[in-house]
Image (cartoon, rainbow, N blue to C red):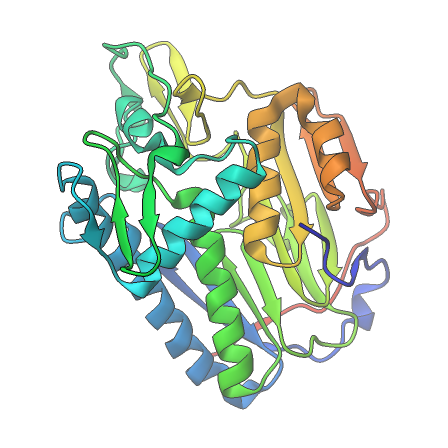
Length: 337
């Protein structure tokens, strides 16, 4: 996992913002998705491609839809199931991420999340549920998933539920960005719930990406703005997608070794990579690794920014330091009507 060609902080006057790309925003797969293009005439086609990719990944990977492919797979009582090319890719990517992160990001945490109460779309959760009735249980382990590339079949053991949220969102950002750049011939940035992928020729100065725990934060509320020319950036946080079960505050990032929400050593981790999948793997794994994250991220070599629970900020592997009181700007996007 390596960094994109350029990652920096643009510091200057807001009067210096260059011509703005066109942007569209939509709600899908339980989050906000954004597409921005350097060629204004390309925005309609770019939006259609992104909507198509989002609909496809939802139909393949949603654990909340009884008509989804992944639902049928994990209710097949352990039998091999022939799946679509997209679901096979998504599960393969999830297993590759699990292997690269030493199991810190594991797609077999689905039952653990359900046990913690995350068993439906997040916005339908009761934010103040009752106490947990059972102790969390470790995830079965990603290595139990059997993939047959030749037959394009997948087998998961009975009772194993998959959650591809950690990697599928990043995968669809990468897929959509590539399709738009190649099919519409434009520079493009795609953001899905804060998982960002860029492809094609970027605007002068790069794409500006706000870093914040909440991907819907306004420009004035972000911690930092960095610019990328390509590749991906992802952020993972223990401060969003939270709910309560009795006296416990829970969140959506699970430690596979315990089946419980990760202790919030880091409130926000951001990382960059050659792809959004690479970036998301590093940021999510770092949250799970906790105090071990710094040496592990140094070993990976990916630029990263970590915000500890006490507010201290650590930047690694070339991630730019926070600029302090200077105004932070870059190429921003103008929403198309």
